[in-house]
Length: 272
Image (cartoon, rainbow, N blue to C red):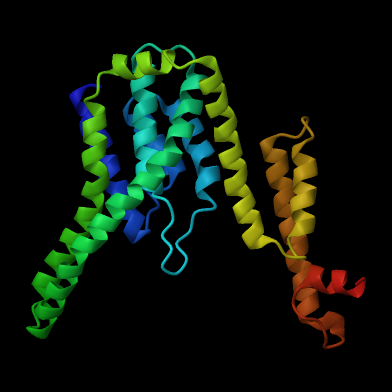
């Protein structure tokens, strides 16, 4: 990578790390982080493909109570950099590189949990310092400590990203080329399975009588090859409008003062 690309990649990594906590502009989401890294390194198409694939996995990642989800920021940034290094090293098969990057992202996301734990441990004394500043009505110190804590979260991604950027592209390419066929094939299968598991986790959280008909209908329509993405989008909008109309009618009870507000649920319950 050239120096300008490295600087831009580190900036993206810094923003992704901070957004992993702030969660305001979604820079930590794979579709955003991988796309930005692809753009600043001259591989926008590959970045979008990698980000879209990883996003399907990250859809099922969520912080629930004390359970912290895998680190999407580190997984996105590190896998995108590895992909770029392999492409810059002369790897002609971009699909294999993307598949390998997807497989690498999963262990990287778990490793990112360790960095998250370190940063959150270091944030404890910062919180106490902010409490002390609040007792003295020192708003400037509170703001400075808040910024320092957020930057610390960004640095935990920016430092590994900077280190990866200085790895010679030939090393990454040679490592990928040295992989036996059974390993690369297994990683391809594993990457596809992880994406399916991530999507299944989302469906599991959303699974109700209300949404199953839409899922089944969308699955069938997506299998029709003659339908374009625009056509599928218009069908989805039409279904949403129809559902909102049914829901409004259910809320009003069809003029009879009844109904639970769940249009499809009321219909299905009538047949149970």
